[in-house]
Amino acid sequence: MKVNEMLSVLFYLNCAKRTSDGLVPLYVRITIDGERREFASGKRMLPEHWTAQERATRDCPDHLSINSYVTKTTAALEKCYNVLEATETKVTATMVKDKYMPKSPPKRTLMDAFKLHNDEFSDRVGKKKGKKGTLLRYERLEKKVRNFLYQQYKIRDIELEAMKKSFAPNFYHHMLMDDIGANTAMTYVKTLKQVINRAVNEGWATHNPCGYFKFSYVQPEREYLEKHEIMQIYNKVLTVPRLEEVRDVFIFCCFTGYAYETTYNLTQENLFKGLDSKMWVTKNREKTGTEETVPLMPIPLAIIGKYKNHPYCVANNKLLPVNSNYRYNAYLKEIADLCGITKKLTTHTARHTFATTVTLENDVPIETVGKMLGHRNLRTTQIYAQITKRKISNNMKELQEKLFNEDGTLKTIS
Image (cartoon, rainbow, N blue to C red; front, side, top):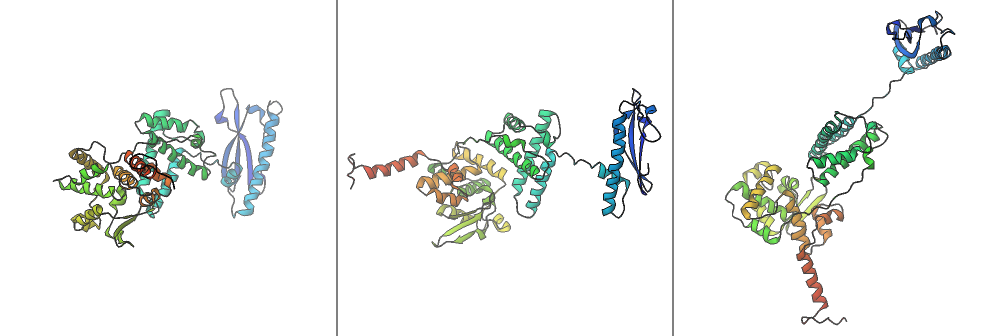
């Protein structure tokens, strides 16, 4: 059927696709300047009910619907052609078909969301606006989600819109059964929510199935060293250089509160003389970028002096000879055994020791401790702050001296 000078629309029965009950599908063919494009109408009929005028006969039970479809489709295709002709220099059959039957956008999946999120963050890392360690954490999460999908549902991926509210609690349970700690598993779910939020913001999903999950954390018992344990490690004679170096770095962290990565990146440029004419060390915390500035007490100052001319420090412009994180923690275990320390020594133990034994237990205000630790709010500092028995004892001793005389009688309030 010639619709206009350029556009032809043909409705025909595709007998090659005849069904077992004898019905033949009706197809539509668009032709423009010799180019053809076809699509199925979704209508079926017996061949004898179709005429050369491209109409269904009255004998066809569905003739009214079919004939109406032919009329409306012809008009719609002509309209699509006219719209395209008004804006395009050349109109093709493909363009008219795509205009009439716009392709549905691809259904995005959870792995698509990870690729979007992680690729963007990788770009930030390349521009020094994101941490490589954080990117590795996102990539670990992706692997865990892939493993969960296969074990739980025997699939490699899932459409975002197909994800149910049960996905987050099921994933959380899966990680717990995989011997991952409750707080760590909770953090993974929280990060997964962040990844999907990025996809929602991109318009790939209408909602975040993890948004219904209630996040709760168990306050862990944080290990820290008592004063005598710190000195026990510090004064231990170690004949193996690698252990001596790790011990010194650990003790340095006990008296500065610096985390492993921050300590690893310290250079001579991070030292400066403060207003009190004493040496200080300052560095933006690697994890958050928040400044950590700490005055150096005699022990960490002596440790810095000890390694000033160390070959590794000189060659790499480092303040201290810090091993890889894996070796650092492995050597700390050896040191704990040699020193008779039963507590688990890790890169975090020193930080907790600084917050508790070195500062708060000696009445350094929590606001000052938080500032030295590079915390943005006191709630974070309170996680590190252990209220020890010694602290309680010291405070109550001061209170008793204010309220009571030496003979135990209550002082007269003036």
